[in-house]
Amino acid sequence: MTTEQDILLTRIQNWYQTNCNDDWEHSYGFTIETIDNPGWTIKIDLSETPLENLQFERNIDNGRFNWMFIKTKDKTFEAACDPTKLSEVLRIFLDEIIPNYSDNDFHYQVYIPLTGAPTNVWRLANAKMLTEEVLEIVNFPELKYEDIKAKSIDDITFNKEDIFNYKTTYSVGDKIKTELSEMFDGVTLIAKEE
Image 1 (cartoon, rainbow, N blue to C red):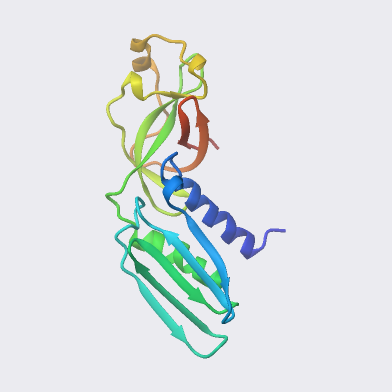
Image 2 (tube, rainbow, N blue to C red):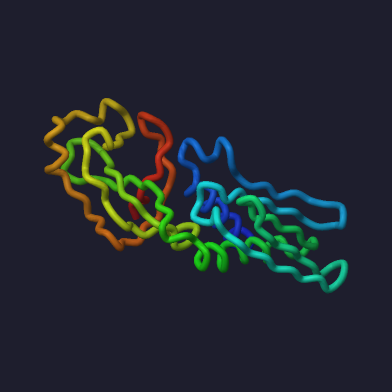
């Protein structure tokens, strides 16, 4: 049986995974720690995400076991809360901040599968974040041979000109879920085929 906490953990994992691009995760991430009030602290790096310019603050102070302080500072979401509010802070981040404050001009590079190729290959698309799990395709850059991705270099078994014969079933405006995939040249965010 899936609990609300399981769902929240899956959702925050999805947000983290979406931002991992074989570079971001080496400098940024998030932490959840306990404090001796008692309570929790949460820090989420927003640099190089659609929330990096977020200005947000919310405070609740109704006694020792009913408090929460949230603010953004230096491209970081910072929260501290009583022992019962960890889920609420994560819900605010996932349900309120991401859908309402994400910069629509910030685009993720997502690779979309091509059909018609002799092996599995992907092409580049740009997408904006709608939720921690769902992105919307905003454009397809010009198709270039050097931008094609494959799991193995051995999967690129076609001529340069052949890529223009391959098609994608995705269009601008499509909403997609993504996952990280190991490609021959590193970790890549790809459209999850359902």
